[in-house]
Image 1: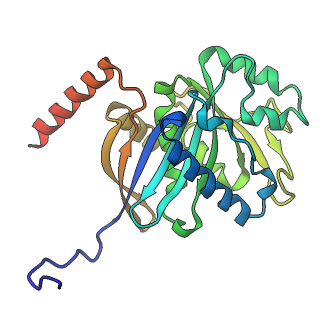
Image 2: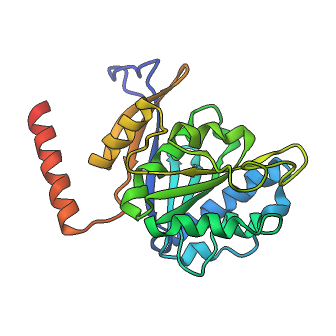
Length: 263
């Protein structure tokens, strides 16, 4: 029976989600759920022909995954960062080389600085309009430097170009038709190759987004309010991907100073 003296819930209390970053092999259960949900989204929009039947990234230590988790709706979004390695193609390279073999030269030029591909962005239709793609795009840019990707590329549909652009990605004009690939994967979609030329400085990111990313890099585990239009979310960020002694010591010092300042 409900306690009549219990305080009434705040009528405008924000919804809550958690963004959790991890190396793919460390969380096989979450990777399996990522695949199921991503496949469902692609099938719903009619591009099920590009759903991979094999997914070696789930056991690849060079693959980082970020998922958005909701207490009621479950996993409502995801994104991956696949690090480049000599002799191993990034996913977008395998796609582009079929029509533009010179893509290998463009990718090789980025490799010395540490390159990675942002891929597999999806948001569940049951949780649309909450800003999940924006949050995931920011989160993957946040972990890029710690993961070893001082450069990043992505291959995105025209209607999702705004997400990487906000975080410092620009069109790769040296591949395809000045970076554009019309009618891929289906006639009504144009796909665009993009690159983030410096994930540390983020010179092409919006100033607001740059400051938010720097904050998350300084304190990779934090909870903050995020607003998207009239929607407000309480987001718990769990962005720590490397737990070496120096990182943990620095984080503890920052956490202690923050507690002292707010206590």
